[in-house]
Length: 194
Image 1 (cartoon, rainbow, N blue to C red):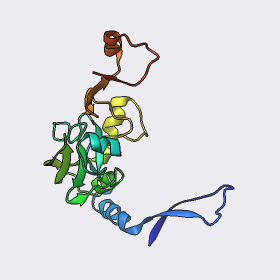
Image 2: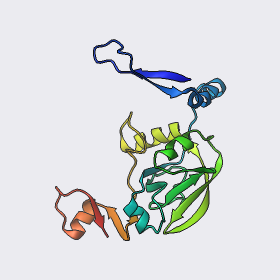
Image 3: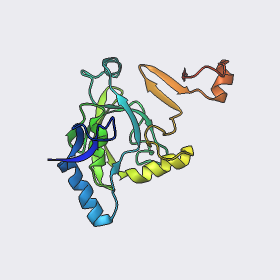
Image 4: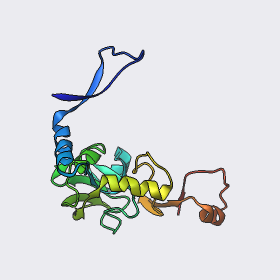
């Protein structure tokens, strides 16, 4: 059973094509609304990207799976060194993370304040870390306040980490300081290999 969420409407009326979410996903939201009067979704506080074959090979992984941590959101639940940029999350609270898109859903469905085990691959070594989840709604406000914007996805607009290790090199943020240091023109964008 699905709950209708949107329809295709080229002319303003329905043409019989609609979209829905599984009612099972909505049950947790209904329970939260009954209990708290608002939603309280779990939040990890990381920006993620897919693990490609090349990335998996560079990190010493046998297969391309999981979610690569591209950055950690300042002030978030794991802004204490628990999870670092360059880590690959392969399991969250006992649930496998086979693809990047698996992670946001399982995190959001988790209880705020819950301490969970997260299995990561760091520099080719698999290890388990304990993480206490924050609240996604608070995270969205935090990211918006830091970046001076509203209504945008917190993970998309999160501030970048200063450096990250990937593919055997360390990259840093391209800012005024690094432009001056390496003689990089203002019109050039990207990251600096440090």
